[in-house]
Amino acid sequence: MRARTHGPRSFAAVAVGQRETDAWVAHYRHEWATFLRASVAMVAAGVGMNGPDTLRGAWLVLRANQAWAPFPDKDPQRARDLMRRFYALVAGAAGLDLDPTQASALVDLDAVGRSRG
Image (cartoon, rainbow, N blue to C red):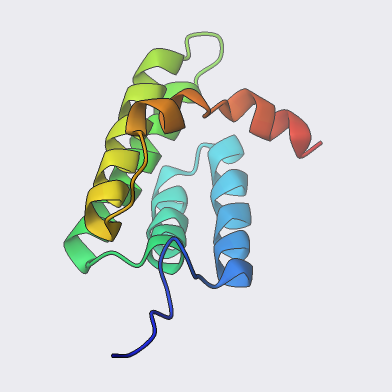
């Protein structure tokens, strides 16, 4: 049996970090097509799902960021719901024992943005 070389337990941290950086730049600029491309690459490098699930996951991450983005009318509950769906997809695809609701409750896109300066 071959060792798993990608996915949520073992992934290319540099590739994920670079795509995450690209995604955050696009998020703040509201460049959603660019964000989606970065999100697809980030999900593919970080989670290792099949093609359709990678696209579905990236779409959920995009929509969550869009729900969070408009100031002052952001919708954090919708963003968390979309991230809950993302984590449920990841958990199912990777066979992870995680609570998607708990994972999505930890998502605070404002805190992430503040920590980046």
